[in-house]
Image (cartoon, rainbow, N blue to C red; front, side, top):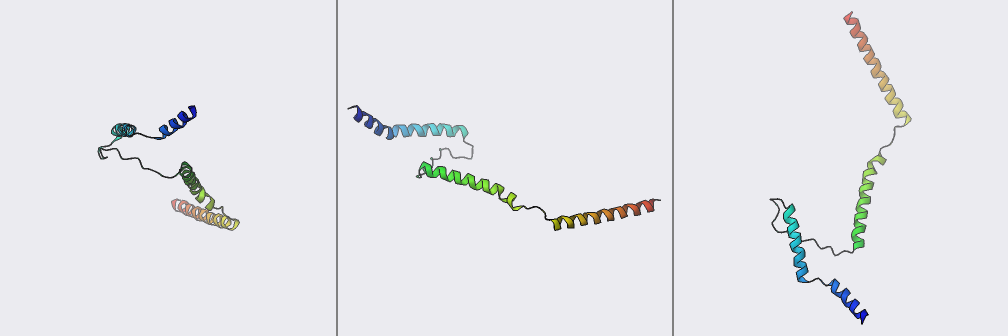
Amino acid sequence: MDGEDDSNLVIKKRFVSEAELDERRKRRQEEWEKVRKPEDPKECPEEAYDPRSLYERLQEQKDRKQQEYEEQFKFKNMVRGLDEDETNFLDEVSRQQELIEKQRREEELEELK
């Protein structure tokens, strides 16, 4: 007999009465009133029903986070260092600019004298 009562109890716990649903709606409406902005509707929006299993929803969140993580480091991996030819070229350009600046300063000093 006790086994029958336990199974009946499990079935009853799965069942949600209309009164319980109304109580939940009432609580949600009270919470909505606390956070509602003037431009929001007066009635609390219904919760969206997601028919997917918990596994599917968690897997989607995991995939989304993994994609965001990969996107974050995607550009870091695309940037590469300068090779020797490029550094030599930049050094040469830098030296030429320094020479030009030095000549300009010398000319200014000559004109001031």
